[in-house]
Length: 284
Image (tube, rainbow, N blue to C red):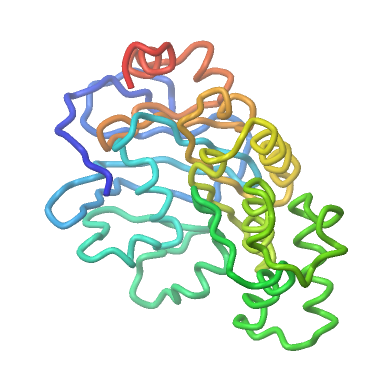
C-alpha cells in the first residue's frame, strides 16, 4: 500500500506554461500528439488514506510516458487505476474525478472490466510466468479469451514472442517450463503474454527492478521497439531508465502531480523546483 502525507501548496505548470500556486496539478504534454488517456481531477483513497489528490494529466498515444517520484508518491496507484487493478484491493477506490480512455469513463457502472483489461495490458514488477510451458503461458490466455482455432493460437504465440524479442531464444523449446527461463526471459515472456491479447495500452510497473543490467537493456530496447504500435506507461525509480526509454515524464510527490513534460525538458530544464530537487538527488 502506498502511503501519502499532506503536501504543501506547490507551484504547478499549467498547459500554457504559467506558474501558479495550487494544491492540484493540471499538465499536458506539449506538441501535436493524440491523447488516449485523460485523468481529470482524480482523488484516490485506500480506506481513509488519500493516495492521489487532484491528479489531472493526459497520456499521449503511441508514446512512452514514464512516472517518476519517491516511494509512496502515488505513481503505481495511478498506473493501476488505468486497468482498474485497484478494484482487487478492499476499500480502494477513486473518490473524485474521472479517468477516460478514448473518451470513455472507465469507472462507469456499465464498463466491462474484463474488456477493459484486454485493451489495457499490464506487466508487473516481479515476473510472474504461469507454472506451465512457454507455449501455454501465451496460449492459455488466448483460450480464456475465446480463441479456439489451433492455427490462430500458434500464430499468435509466435507473433507475441517475436514482439517481445524472445522467439529466437525459445522457439525450439516451447514445450519446456517457463520457470526454466532466466529472469530477463521470464519478464519478456510476461510482456509477450500481455501483447498476445492485442491491447492498445501496455502498463509496466517497474519491469526491470529485479533484473541485471544486460536483461534491463534488452527490456529497454524492447520498449523502444514497441512504442510505435502501443501506448506505453512505465513506472520507474531509475531516472536514467526514464531518460533512455520515455518520450514524456511525469513527476509525482506526496500523491500529487508536480509536473509533466517532454522527458528531455524534465531532465534538462524542469519548470518546478521540486522536480529539479528530485532529479538532482536533493531528496527522494
